[in-house]
Image (cartoon, rainbow, N blue to C red):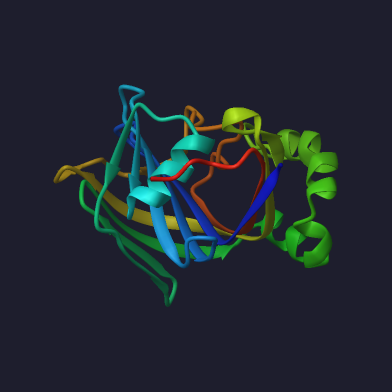
Length: 206
């Protein structure tokens, strides 16, 4: 029997001059309780998941594609126009900016509609035209279906990022698009308010 998992929170997407790209999930509501995770694509193309528990790692790895999975302590703060993340190998400090034009448009859509899978399936082609690499509906791992309902979006204006203690360089566009799943984050670094819905076969957890 199909199952549905819902995650409410934020997704931040950041690129760097070195070519390292990171997608950070800040989940205030989820089947696993509040948590944060990070997906990192190194300049070599190697995709690494940083997860706070084995249970979260098992679920995320069943939905997305990675070359390596690491369970690490993750500390995160998102307040006062700043985002900070300490995730072992990945250190991030970001200054958040103004709401984008897409964020303003998203706020005009009633939330119940904006996060509904049928709506997200219908608008996915439009989302791809407005923001290259972005999809709002698609197929996830194991033939599951996944939907991203964005209700707000702010720029990231500045950031310092390091990987294994080495500075990853200045903030840059998320290019090439990340390859963890069917959708990338927008090319412009930003943080989105989002509801992610995953539907399909149950995931086996440790």
